[in-house]
Amino acid sequence: MLKGKIAVVTGGTRGIGYAIVKKYLENGAKVVLFGSREETVEKALTSLKEENADWEVSGDYPNLKDAKAVEAAIEKVKEKYGRIDILVNNAGISDSKPVTDYTAEHFENIMQLNVSAIINAIMPAAKIMKEQGGGCIINTSSMVSLCGQPSGVAYPTSKSAVNGMTWSLARELGPSGIRVNAVAPGITKTDMVAALPEKMIQPLINAIPLRRVGEPEDVANAFLFLASDMAAYVTGEILSVDGAMRS
Ligand code: NAD
Image (tube, rainbow, N blue to C red; front, side, top):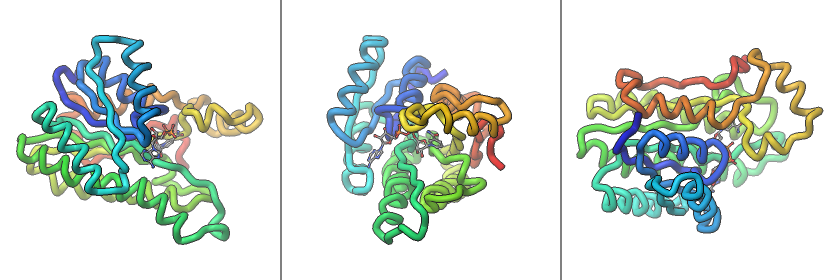
């Protein structure tokens, strides 16, 4: 579904991002994954090469909060492949701190990675996509962007900002042939969720109409659809992949 396409995936070293990278490689894309550290990037690349030595995948680890570093990393991809067809902004951090324990720095840190880092990647990538006559941007939002959560207010705040960015840029960049969408996962079995004890997992499962937590692959399938030509007329969409848990 993505034969010959060039994709950049941030936060591609584990969890949902790793599943997206794998899904894109399985579908014929060439992928550059971004992670936060050299070791985790190398580990992910080794594991992907073990799965299939023919996959064309490489990695980088720019500081996503540093606009210049991200611009340089995006430019490097353009120099290597001559184009960028798909940008997935997936890196993110969650939060569960009560607001009474908040500091301004804590709030700012979450907004910087979950919101500013995305625009840092979109600014240079959108220029490249405009020059080449089109492209596709997909952001990772969250179920809680649509309904909030009982603590850790910065997280849903940041993800609602991601939705606003997605809707607005779909309108701004549509005339240049660039589609902009987001995927809003519900509870997904990444390291964080897999580490929860059974007694915490079961009540969560009972609140999900499909009666199971999501797998990273469930989410990656939505990213595949949105990146493919099957979604050629889909833009400005926040696609929920949450088993209808949102309330
Ligand atoms: P994860 O913690 O397993 O992976 C997060 C990724 O972000 C990692 O690849 C990590 O390298 C990257 N990252 C974190 N901090 C970084 C930093 N400072 N600089 C660069 N990269 C950084 O999490 P996940 O569950 O796979 O989450 C991926 C995305 O999905 C996030 O945006 C998260 O908010 C969103 N999400 C997850 C769930 C869930 O239940 N797991 C639900 C809704 C939304």
